[in-house]
Length: 261
Ligand code: KIV
Image (tube, rainbow, N blue to C red; front, side, top):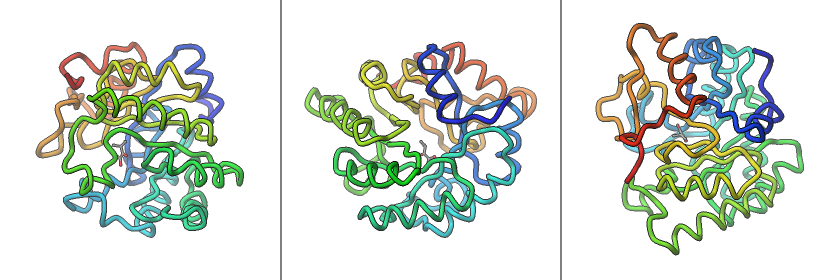
């Protein structure tokens, strides 16, 4: 596989070819994902849950994200690396620029931030300075205390309309990619059709341009995994990663049982 760039991901969207994303937190996970041919690795702040054993992603710091991004970057040859800006590291545009600089210098190819229209100026400031941005809408785990739990977002008509508007605003501000987490499959499909940028789903059905799963969930290593997760581990970690990527590309994963009703 040649080095994956935003161009590669945009071409896949245009051609209607799905791509696969997985989280990674260290160089071995990153190497395995890269060798299995996954297009992107996400250094997710989910490391707060699955690596640090925290209840939420809120305690994760920028220094920790930069450290794990460096580890992942050492294991990757071709995959595109997206790194999460952690809680309160992008409360203002100035802060977002400084925080994104640390992650890009640690080896990220893009940064991800959680939220809608209120982030338009911040997204514009980042992309204008050459930093690719991935938006994140739907269930935004950094806001779990405000949302009141990890549940499907956008079920009501007004909330669905707001999500679509947020997606359009992020795109117009210059976002290059968008993650949709735990939204009804039909809404995820509608947003995917409405925007030009590639949409990566998790717990959002199989009408998005790509899927992302947490590394430990995909291998059945987490204690209680969400209903949208499939355990791909049949014979080896390498085979599980390859099976995941193949099933995403063929549109076979997620199945209806991995899709919120
Ligand atoms: O932190 C993370 O792993 C994420 C994915 C669940 C999208 O943001």
